[in-house]
Length: 125
Image (tube, rainbow, N blue to C red; front, side):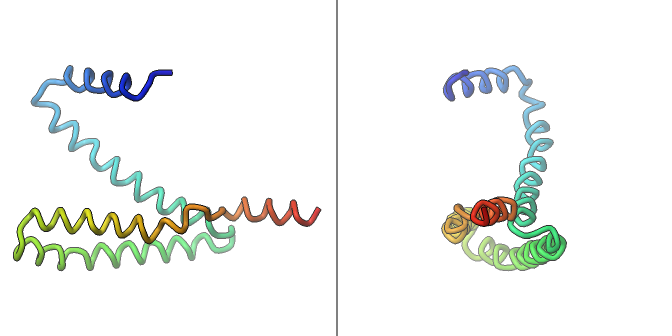
């Protein structure tokens, strides 16, 4: 198995083989895949945490929170850009990401519905 520096060197070599004019198009093509995969993982985690009877309700709630957050994020961020500039905008996004990681960190040891059921079955034996 290759080490991380070896893999990065191979990836760098691959990127250098792509013509300069195509790199921007390639990054614009791959950017939505990166965004959608994170959004899909949030839905997957939400479905894993609840039982089969409540998956629809949990997905609906997660979707509602996501749309509400997306709708309300535009106005404050546009005010930050107009008053303080783009550096403040990116700083705000970094702080928001750090805050999200901090708030979600207690959930790292949560068990899925299937894991909780397996523990219950093991205790019942």
